[in-house]
Image (cartoon, rainbow, N blue to C red; front, side, top):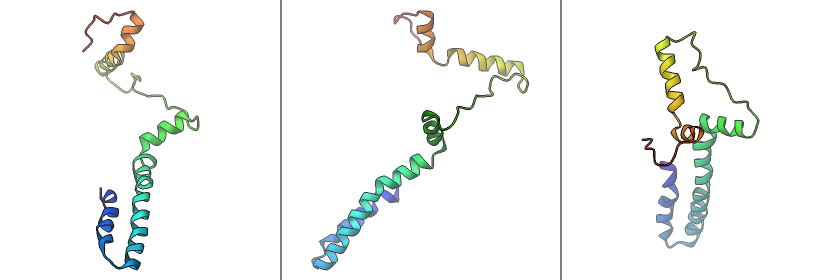
Length: 108
């Protein structure tokens, strides 16, 4: 993460006693450190396809795409059965609440 250390490299050189140099380095330091948040937002939110799709779906700008994992035409039956078994037990807490399970049951 080169982005997170560049401002402090400039900050070390602010110890130079010449006032004009100090002021210039202070402005550079402020600009670099203030742009870090924008850089992190762009690299980890805007350019991340999964996050972008989530927010577009949440805001109603994009419809949620249905998963085609339940299609039995393209898969053998053993894989389809495994997929169905996984989907039934994927969210243990939701299934326990739907069945009326108690807290005493160990779901790990």
